[in-house]
View (cartoon, rainbow, N blue to C red):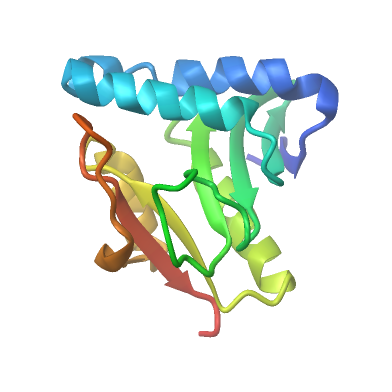
Length: 170
């Protein structure tokens, strides 16, 4: 995996990131109920075009983007008005191209977000996911993220969006 580079995305890569993200999340269309998938799909599209301040981070292999993640600062509304009282940087839309999965790319993207949050002086970092995303949930728990149910939310017709956080002071 030494040939995978984790770096900031360039402005000219936004379309490629959007395409990769849609492809990476497409599997949930067959796992979730139609209403839940519609909610997730809409949330993905909203995040991809959002003007909120965000660090877009990519994994590049042989000149091709194979993964991406978004890291929002604590003051940003990563989920619009759905999440209140969150004081941590928020990690969103960790995506790995299907052909590049099971090689640790998502983990490296999350580790980079954790590194950046720590470097910015954050005491913790958070994320939201849902029960359909079992592989992601296993990875987050293995990395030390713990449930923060007080920050869960549930859009109409969608799955419960579960909050997790990682204490960065340890």
